Length: 330
Ligand SMILES: Nc1ncnc2c1ncn2[C@@H]1O[C@H](COP(=O)(O)OP(=O)(O)O)[C@@H](O)[C@H]1O
Ligand SMILES: [Mg+2]
Image 1 (tube, protein in one colour):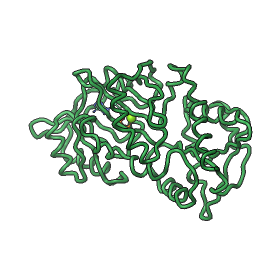
Image 2 (cartoon, helix red, strand yellow; image 1 turned 90 degrees about the vertical axis):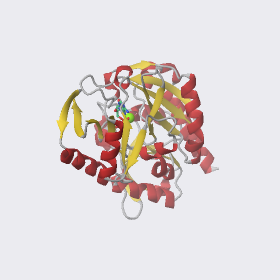
Image 3 (tube, rainbow, N blue to C red; image 1 turned 180 degrees about the vertical axis):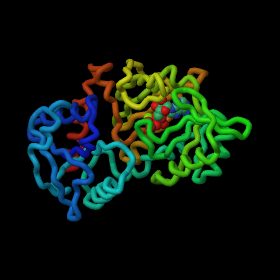
Image 4 (cartoon, rainbow, N blue to C red; image 1 turned 60 degrees about the vertical axis):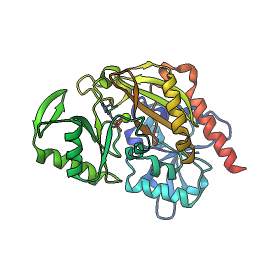
């Protein structure tokens, strides 16, 4: 089994460690880790074999056992890398498709569902959202909504997300929750960058939900179309934005509406070969949850195993990977 991840970006709470340590405990399973940039022109790569437990502190040990592997040596590859799809990652995904290597999630599904633009399919579930491909359209939509978040379509980790406001033809930005005037030129420059640097040349203009930072993001983790567990991630106190799990997390079981939402999404996930996904839900003032994001790349749930330790996430995910691997071998 190969795991693709960004080794230099692993943080202390990364579920990578959970999965690797579970995987190496399985008899007859050899576990390797590599990065997209390790792949050469001939579909060979230098992987690191993991033979003993690894933690954040001992992660340097990952460099110990190197092995030259061909992509087709792997019976299963677990794709666990943050967006966006870089040039190297795009090439790796395309080679995996060409060589028919079994993977979780499927590269085709990552290409299809891997940007926020896919939310276009669910206008009833999301906050009011406009999708723009030009600066002038984006400015028009910002004026129309007033209080909004602008989002680069392939952003992650809170980068490429900005809280802006417009009234009487003027534009403002929020920094540390303070509203300050912003010139149209300055805002246009940011929008232009978001559009140009995104894979599908799209920017989202999303109604700002005032209750969202008060409650925090609800994260619903989905395994093979069913809810695995859910919890609340608290936002950064200064910015009001949830970027990582380190502001604390609280158990929050799925509601009836969450279950309904996952039923709506399930056919899309199945069709696109997305076995593992995580939804970000934001609360609006009527207390209803809205769909803000479908994470399909590296569905983080670093706190889910803490708040929900009986779920045994590591075991369930590795069981799923092994089941898929066995199926593809038969
Ligand atoms: N419409 C919104 N209203 C209020 N806060 C939002 C809204 N959309 C996003 N946020 C905040 O910004 C964070 C990042 O947005 P998100 O769409 O999840 O992008 P990312 O891919 O960077 O995680 C969210 O976790 C949430 O805290
Ligand atoms: Mg998010």
